[in-house]
Image 1 (tube, rainbow, N blue to C red):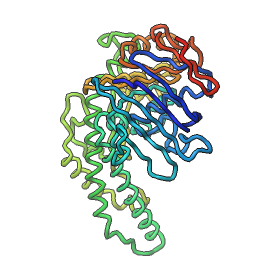
Image 2: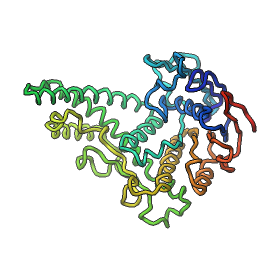
Image 3: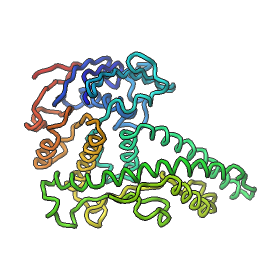
Image 4: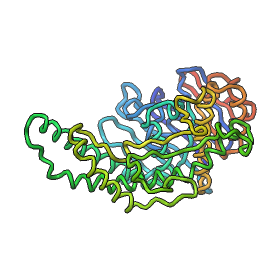
Length: 391
């Protein structure tokens, strides 16, 4: 899989940019503020309908423009598809596939797969649980695009249910009787969509965990068998269900998650914590309260890993994602956005060696010297609103 051509109009800083791409390694080199990251961000947007830099679409539209357009020609298995996305703040975005209108933008999900490395990734290790949930859900959607709908449905139900709990809590504190007639209905919706999302996450963690352990050892350039147990990387899913989560779920070689079992467990836990939820006015149970624990030995990487170890864990997560998606049958495009400037010489060289053989690698760097020699290939200079091929 690779992107053969990228075109953007009024996307970020670019009034217009047209870039021919090819398999292998392409480096976009330019000083900060020249727009190189904006170009690979556009590639990532085609794959995920989201940005790795901002939470909403509005900043993606160039200042003064009414909309942004991204077009990408994607080649997969000898077949080429043209994806066009129109981003309009305050309105529904629109998508076209081979010039024909898609029913909804998420219909394009799965046409292009990417794995993106960026300095912002350090927040996966050091940030709050929301960063790790986002990592899981984005990978889950990359593997199975239908989960975009599941995630959207869950978030919609969660918002409605939380609003009901908040109003009920306020009424109770004011001495009035809370109207909870519809709460059981929302409990059912939350449990149904939550169980499906939770099952997807648990199965994903079980599938990716061995890859993370192996990738961490590879990044550290250490034989996995001889690595000290205190420095072996592993994953553990921490559910708001606590002890109610069936044993073996989310573990390598463990049980495949059963949606019906999880739905029943969620309903039972929702009933148990209902008084606390009404008192606090928030939903206390569900995938939105879960976390992915990143462990070195038995200790959490967050708070215990050094800066270098934190970066090694981030790289291991992304490399594991790449290997997992490749196992699924479609090797993703690798995007390395200004990441080499953040790494020491050993990790820089090791990462370059590990990704050099990918079908397509897009690299951004402030100076040409930041691109490791292992990733020599096509180079574009990005400056003053132009993208110019120099080798």
